[in-house]
Image (cartoon, rainbow, N blue to C red):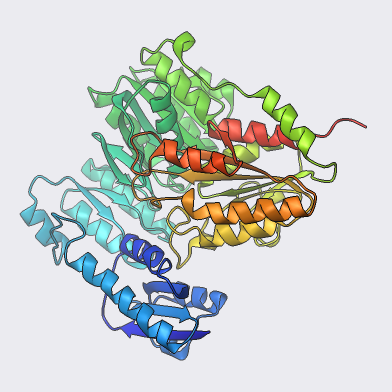
Length: 514
């Protein structure tokens, strides 16, 4: 193998653009591995980890662009580099038809006088500076960037609160404002249900289930995952709740998060008590008594939250297809698995999807380990599974210097093949997330690996059950029905929701009492 490194001095591209370019580069014929990234310390660490580090890369600064190609030989590297360069040329020549470029935030504000929102997608070290500029210019802010210091997040949100503005993020991947999806979002029906969510894929799941149940979304406001921590104090969730309370198009409000800090939860409950609109609260693992005492409607799961919100918004529950659990299917799959196939391995792009599936499986089996969640059940090494294991590939441990797994599934594919070869594994559960910003064919790129894993398991005398949850709608650009069809053709079982994914997985590996 030959590795070539090209450093482009003082050439900056935002992280979203580099995610897309890296994914396209890795699809070029002849390339074994490609990294297109800025020359930050984190990205250099990634190069070390994947065996592509060089002295040339070490000389790159955070403002330099690194292009590293690994191919069969020098000629293949040279040809691949030409094709990667063409990707940049196509981007600059107008992949985004009406794109207007500005040299500064001030110039953009001056030209776009009606703009009221800025999306910040730069390395975390620079996000605070750009977000502060946006707030100073009277703009609401959505910070897609991660790795922003906690004290900087607090300062930005306090500044926004003083100005009557909203900060979504940092690490906010999903929002829908006035029907327009931002960053990672699904194409859902517009309606009268407003959502404030401290999670990205959880927000996507709730919005998609609302659409599936016949309801619609007025706005979806993301807060970033740390907003409900004691340090931040829920500033963005409280501001989002107030905004939806005042919004004439919103009639029902849904709040979604993992369990907030105790003091933050009390602030939220206090504001909910004075809200004139019905509020559904889904704090995964939260206390029902506290929520109902605040006058809100309690929901244990994202599916239940979506259903209750749709009913409050005027839907008739008896007419809604909630996709009940397929009990005969559980019996059928149990019969196919050998006695020693005891474990579930969940490989997820979405953190909230991972968290919710893990919680449901843990209700039946206590030995569920992960790279997120309860520290008592944290994996000692994220690369080595233990008993039932649920991995969030969107966690910082996997995304530093790399595209999000919703765009680049390479790390998940490697882990999938490893888990599929484990004779103790009975079920591998995965999410396939559709929508704007996600991979254009998440199911298709997995199919060759699914075929290989199933064939090798069959040759070893095992049935390998692959359980897939496709998060999306028929209106999403990836074509929901076609994604489902391709997976089913390869013998993959399809779950209808995050909740059903957890319940089916737990049921499949259940063993009869001896």
